[in-house]
Image 1 (cartoon, rainbow, N blue to C red):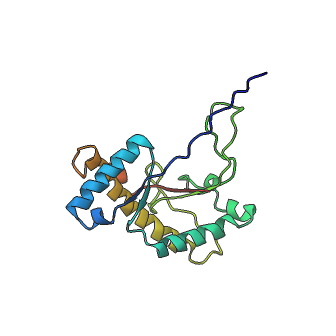
Image 2 (image 1 turned 90 degrees about the vertical axis):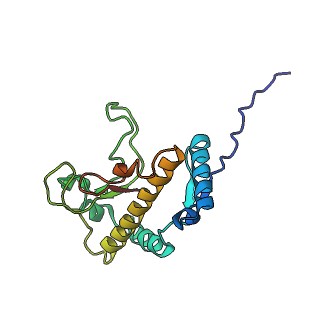
Image 3 (image 1 turned 60 degrees about the horizontal axis):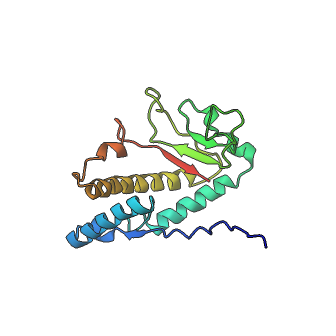
Length: 190
């Protein structure tokens, strides 16, 4: 009788869900718990989900609705705001534009679309310039920028949680949440 070997079935990964509302409220006990849960999640799973943050469901819904409308446009219309038309690498990134290994000619291209923005700045330094916005999508820019600012504020909060979880001062990573001009990049990949 031939023996069969079966590949082990991977066990599901539990994604830690961490409510940071107590941390944001300044509650010392909740802060301690948030820091402990964050560190444990980073050490064990390597990722987590944050709830109780300041990015309201309304902001999220407006953003998701706006970006879904953009990505449903015909390719030709999305290409009107292609990153390739930007002097500062902003705008639409078409399906297959990137590869995991750019040096490997046989590497498979990424199967995603993206849209990148930053704070509008005059051309000058690396990646500075103006964003490209699609024509004919009223409210798209406003919804995107509202979400951008809300998530940027959340990233600053999370860098503080990360620092505290490592036994560092809360503002230790503050510079990672902004560049010299106080901005960050936003990439939405679909």
